[in-house]
Length: 126
Ligand SMILES: [Zn+2]
Image (cartoon, rainbow, N blue to C red; front, side, top):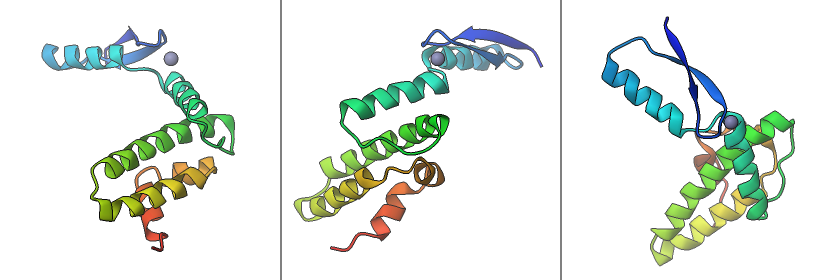
């Protein structure tokens, strides 16, 4: 496998597979150049959480960084739901947000990276 060391947006480097058609490789490299490495992404999300005064996550540092990204994405999805819901549904989505803001376990966020909103919604009683 041919690889090339590519510099990411954050300044760190990542080894990219450059086997395949030129167009596809070129697009892949451009995507990597515009991305940040998982550590910098996690640090940015941590800063975002601090700025938004979210409760700190509990867990091992590395776990917390990854969980922070999931929590951020989930809260952004809930915000879209709130912004685009009818008045009747807004309360439910606000409650969903309240529930999400209470969860401070990094392990929980990692476990529910794909279904956090569904799991939280199931526990809401209106
Ligand atoms: Zn980085």
